[in-house]
Image (cartoon, rainbow, N blue to C red; front, side, top):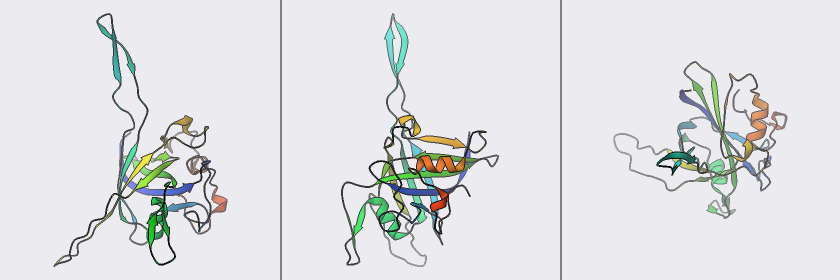
Length: 209
């Protein structure tokens, strides 16, 4: 199914067991999730690659007899018009030193992410990643002149297998369509974001609303 646009991108931090960190201090919010959709904020690009690689053909009796398939290694190239500064630093694994600065701390945090787009007929499409790392390889700056020189935030998300064995059948990626008779938004959010429930939300909009 072809899609158009980016409706929104939602993030969450999960702990080493794959459980959502529902804390405004150690997590992204009291509910655990952060929808990137504030004043002037939002995604302009979310390109997913590495879902599958071409299989390796095995030959026998002078002909192709079998194809072996490797593991899925998804990556997402993200571009944001803007994103909250503190949220971004937490997603990258940077820690506030109490003096107005942030520095990287390893190991990097476990990041869950949900991409929301739509089909040409307007059906909601969701692509979920229950565990991964977010990388900001660099920042770009150029001088203002007769025109303002803006630089979007560019990030790379590297997906990993879920930390819970019963999530996504052990795969790093899952896709949903709201047109499916079995689709349930609350169940999807809980699966992607390690047990997240809307009842814990405090002033945060959940994806898909």
